Amino acid sequence: MNEILWTKQGEDDFFQIYSYLNKIDPIFGEVFFENVIEKIKLLENLPYIGRIVPELNNNRIRELLLNKYRIFYFIKSEKTIEIQAIIHMKRNINK
Image 1 (tube, one colour):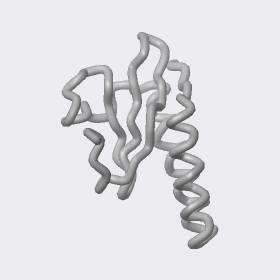
Image 2: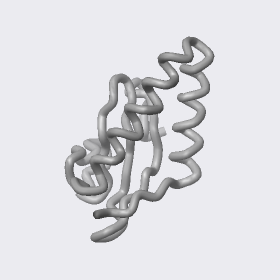
Image 3: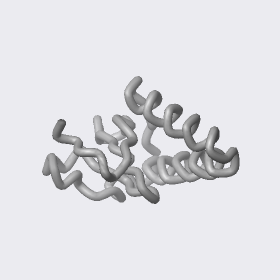
């Protein structure tokens, strides 16, 4: 089983999006929160489940897609996954 770590950027993105959605509708916020956690838990046993980030083309930098969001993660080692960022799909990651 892989250990899941969060970078500060990953945590900040997660809680900013959650807070924004929660202000719009607490149910949206809660569903987003639960869905992100559920997706990330998949990485504990299936680290290569996400696709390679097309813009970066690095086998160790991958993403999970969740509705309008991209969850970026880095396969740091054989047993460690690091959540790097969560961004809206419309956002350009090259900027």
